[in-house]
Image (cartoon, rainbow, N blue to C red):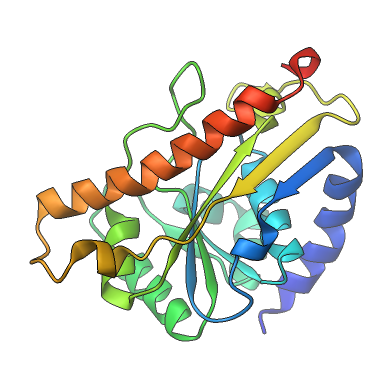
Length: 222
């Protein structure tokens, strides 16, 4: 076990848990064991804490694919590597992260991925067009894909800096039913059109979850 995982869990989860008003829907849809890819929307720098908290509450240990810039920082890099997270250097074509991710799935782990690769730039915080890496990984490993959306965190922490840190702000998350990507492919040859179609399927499920959370989120906190 990576030594820093339990340290970070003990240090970070309690304040995050207590500061916000959490609503976690669909915890039972995260498989209790075995490999799973959790597909995430990305609307805030708070999201890794929120998504990680959800998966921990579901009884699993989250392993993230994260942007390499976080690993370049002396402290966060030390902590993230010690917790076994996987760095991704975007735009390089390096396949090492996918190979590391595949090995994690072979060990039966829960792998958390932001298919967009960055915080959404859409002004309404809806999911953007995603990259195909998640689907490639699902096809190569036959791991199920569970969509998991968050809403409310966009008010808390953006690239420009902290936003509203009001105590008790609602942060809602909802998981959807697992998607069997290999079955959806139907044994067809893997080509770019298929990868894009399956990626659009995943993002469509995420967008539906986001819209459901948005429609029910308390207006006074909007």
